[in-house]
Image 1 (cartoon, rainbow, N blue to C red):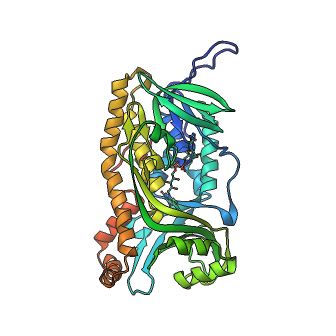
Image 2 (tube, helix red, strand yellow):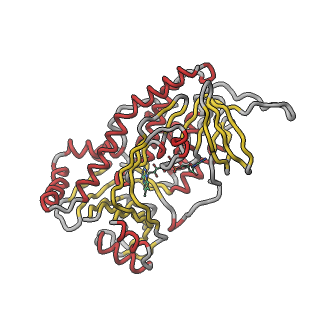
Length: 423
Ligand SMILES: Cc1cc2nc3c(=O)[nH]c(=O)nc-3n(C[C@H](O)[C@H](O)[C@H](O)COP(=O)(O)OP(=O)(O)OC[C@H]3O[C@@H](n4cnc5c(N)ncnc54)[C@H](O)[C@@H]3O)c2cc1C
């Protein structure tokens, strides 16, 4: 893993001496984005404290029951910069082709990595592998203090930010120069700061499950638009695919309660036989689909990131990737500045600049995802024809297809140091 590049951390204080509980950067939430934030920002601060409510060390669901995520090229570059990409790459499955189709329609489009001079359009990795890899890097860092089973309760601001949290039933507090809020879509910290948010209920649910197929197509992902919503099949190893199936909420409820055989049959009906027979299915998970967007990305010394800022529809596989690009921007803004020398107004300005620089791309990604959901979920006959035509037109116009592919890979919006794979 890449070693922190700035000054070495302060020596620990002697046993028995009193130490003010303070840090340069505090992060609330040790999900994927909180962990990544700590690993990136340790290169811009002397001390990071990460507060996580649960015990993320206890292994989550693995094997056929694992959840997974698609990493875009921009995310790969960040992991490269952090020195953890070789380890992740050995456990990730590259997507070299994406086959996009609509159920019962003639339109098909294909995206191929080789057309963009790339090894892969994205990489599928299971969340547990990713979490363990990030945790290992966090443990190896002398600058990151991870506090598990620690629940944030309240925030006070000015001049520094004070985070009050509960650990082992004891209320404690921590002072910080900058606070990153990464406690997820239902962020309690966002609420404590009185940052309003906007929610859209898509009226759909997603059912997720891994399936083993009889005729896997190596490194090929499938996105199939059905009348109920998109169905993605992502390669996860040799013959296993991660299925992300968007359905009407009632249907999703029924489908997730199906037996293995009933589920395999229903999925086979919707997806068809492009991958042969579905031979085995893992546990099913279902959740309602909502998009939540905070109305603002900062308040005083506090900055929102990850699902706390934007929880997106999984159709375009962008929530995590977008948040990593947000993080790259924040890192660039911190640059060579020393947080400990920055006053309240300067840190607040940093938050404002972050918001200004990120809102445009965030809006584009949200519109892209919403556009796909609307286009492919509408039952009107005219839309149905346009939808089918849209897919084949996309196949005929390489420039347009390139735009869609590059947006999916997170490569359309220039690059900063981290996005070029450098710290
Ligand atoms: C089905 C599905 C598929 C997806 N696929 C993709 C994909 O392919 N590519 C992609 O880029 N994105 C994808 N996403 C989105 C991606 O999963 C999320 O963007 C990402 O996981 C968000 O991480 P986060 O750390 O911001 O939030 P979370 O994962 O919600 O983590 C928040 C953390 O904060 C902790 N916490 C909460 N409250 C407190 C508190 N009071 N005190 C302390 N800690 C607290 C929680 O315990 C949790 O660990 C997908 C999402 C779904 C639902």
